[in-house]
Image (tube, rainbow, N blue to C red):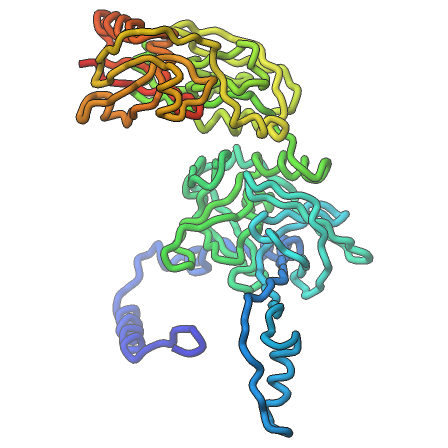
Length: 495
């Protein structure tokens, strides 16, 4: 091992010699001896040469304050060689309490127009005091942060090119990219600027749980630390992704890298350039996945769409256009196959747009018209509770599906810390090993609906479950409210 690079060992030299001997004695098959094969695969040198000037290194620095240190200053003899060292180390005063340090980091980016806009990842420039853009020829220019979006991990920078001619790269259509297509990544891995790697698209639509709009392109083109923010090109030299994350137990590339697709990034970057912030569409609903059990309990042939668990008060559909228990199966003409499809499609829609939303409501498919609000304006309402203004009655305690149901009175609210706006039927106890316990239902939760019908007392719950049982249903769909008022749907096995 020399300077971190592996050298050829004696064993390796012996193995190489054996391989050479075998090559000399074994005749090559005719198809391997053809001139075309001898030249190797088609070179990408021309494409790389064309694109390298458009890809930049992003260097950031941050001033980090020092920690409290009450270290006394050593007393060095006059003229001691350590005197200068101590003077520098303790120049901020006795104890050096305010001594700080400057932290630097490296990433990648790319030029998108001739005026100096540059795209990178938010995590590359987060908390930076200074940002510098370094071109492939070594030229350095200071950069100004225009805007960031933490939800997609994107950032837009601006430089003043002066006399420098910038070479922008065009956006491509990531939706047209296919698994198996060749792609090229260019970036600044481990500080080695202008590094080119080649691979294919390994998969599309990956959800790595990094944000609400995960829809990553997966590639085996080598991506390492420092590649973040760099472009992923197709063979036409178009940007179809922004390299963002890797899976690696060692910190190096193992051939599993992820890029933000261009069809998601373009809209975000355009908004950052125009407004300095994002302006996303907002529907104002809380949603959860449609599982097999929930689909069965709703009479759906297949689990699809996004189940509406609650409506945010003051949001775009607070007027009842969409209701808790609805399953959204299509939005603005686009099918909602899985729950995670809905937030991304809504966010990509313009604020104020009137859209058609197709829902399944109590077994009936219908279309409702909704005018979208703005997500950024509505996030402050996200913790608000929703639901009908129900009034709890005074029922006798009832046991059903392993739950002991009781009154939701002032005493119960105080005991379990239930918010005043939560109404329905109290779950006072849950029997161990019961169907309710299997679904992690706990005392203090409140049943608001059974089978998409409102319940006001324990008798309502028992009657609804009995009707479901007589109707041949294997599961009961319950709308539960947590003590804070957060709603969710749970299916409980009917014994």
